[in-house]
Image (cartoon, rainbow, N blue to C red):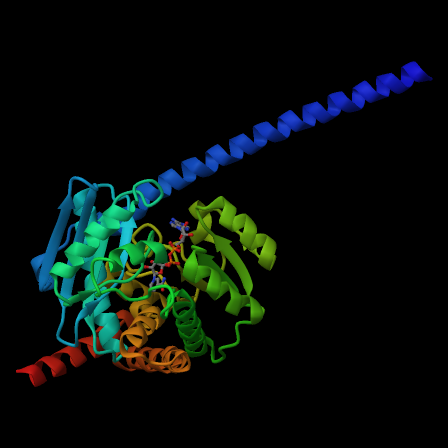
Length: 397
Ligand SMILES: NC(=O)c1ccc[n+]([C@@H]2O[C@H](COP(=O)([O-])OP(=O)(O)OC[C@H]3O[C@@H](n4cnc5c(N)ncnc54)[C@H](O)[C@@H]3O)[C@@H](O)[C@H]2O)c1
């Protein structure tokens, strides 16, 4: 009996070790495939920056190239337009494939900020900054302080804030060298919750326009990118009973989110093939492009990412012809900049929420004017933003 007992004991131990090593191999394989996936997306997600653009045709007021060998800082600050007020827009830290990609990105993003601030009725112009580098390995307090010195050189014509790859702590270092910073801890702080609320409002308005109801219950929604904004957005969608699918290149964040909300997960490679009612891009820009647009099986697009259309004219037109309602990105993701504006002008939290809530009505108005004028929604939004800038510049003259 005893020898049989020992045999069982050794057998159980053998099975345990076998399982342990199999699990360990699977785990390592999983991590390495996720790492490969992350590397791949870091290289390709600069897609938005790979097309050639007419730099002077974008009408920027000034571009500042910032370099400091000691700290390794390489940054570009783009001030697009200051007709409605000082240019406000966040700083992004990203490992661009090359310097040209960074320049293209900052020029497109800063122009987007001009339109966003204009259409939101804020007395702000458009600007943006990019720091070239890996936000996981190349940050240092001195790098951000040096960047702050460059921001200060612009004497308030550019006001910075957080964007992808930047934390509130990084901004505190920038603040040591310049006062032209918003979204600081202890003040209005992280703008992402307000951004998410505005996106939620814009999404509901777009759904109502497309289907006659703004009820998200049971709607299949894919949220691409579950970072700062994506996660706050999920809260709203979950509370309303939407059928959520998430997608992110950060496996840990996906695991936590799926466990918290009981939602579905889709591989970043397959996100465009999913059957969905609403596609919500909340990662990086230019995800609506030549290779994705024909795959999209949604009736509404509403997300937080900036510059979602790789080519505003071409892809805006295709979506319009396909009958997909596209809620213009800079219109519905303006909650964050409203929060920054509120910090500068000491506006209460409840008033900011009210301002972000108005995104519902503005979205409805723009979608209606797109339908009435038979033009893409992106163009309808641009027309309103441009009209305000033109009216303001006449007043300045
Ligand atoms: N934070 C704000 O208040 C705010 C305001 C306006 C616009 N935006 C825009 O919204 C977007 C998200 O902002 P955020 O602050 O949440 O950024 P974030 O960096 O916190 O989150 C982005 C998320 O997208 C993921 N991601 C990157 N590439 C991906 C890919 N190819 N597929 C799937 N996931 C991918 C990242 O892993 C990360 O989790 C950005 O485009 C930003 O410019 C943000």
